[in-house]
Length: 211
Ligand code: B16
Ligand code: MG
Image (cartoon, rainbow, N blue to C red; front, side, top):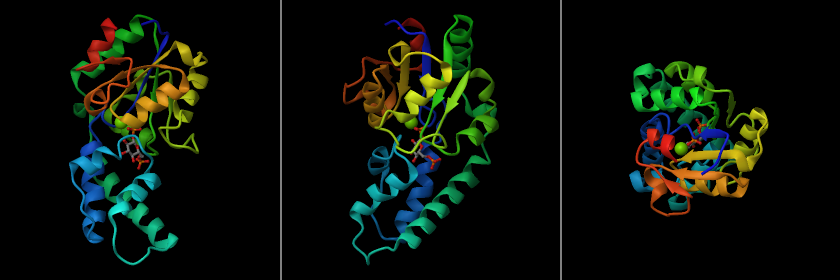
């Protein structure tokens, strides 16, 4: 595979904040008597906050919720999530991730984050990951969330590289679809491996070094 830049998804790839998203959504779903388990949570990977609530509400059978109530639920979910993020530290990043980022940089690749999360800056700060990246494209830069390619195209624009020179690393089906729509190379890790839509599958981040 030939590429000049690597764009990393954040949640589920560089860090495992997916468990905190699950805990926060679970509290909201329980309040509304909506069934919600890890499998339901997988559908929210890479998908924006408001779109995630819409997916959870597919199983809601109560009275119709006003837009104010939905906004309040979204704010509360984020407050619960951010409370969990306070516990994060550099030790939440594996040696495999850190060493791979260093090696890719030494080999001359440009590196970016490409995340739907509006909490990206805070997570990068808590984990001391920001210093490895030439650019960060996240939920604050986009109007359309994955599977729309906007966040990855933003990353390519920030790095000043063409989409076809980028490799995207993703744990989400929505993220792999976004990479394909952007005209980029893609490698799936974790749950995104199952659908087989990505150009490559990796078991751990350092596998990128031999792609
Ligand atoms: P926030 P990624 C995504 O991050 C998460 O996978 C997804 O579950 C979440 O809803 C989305 O960010 C928005 O996050 O609520 O923090 O703005 O996988 O694109 O790094
Ligand atoms: Mg992800």
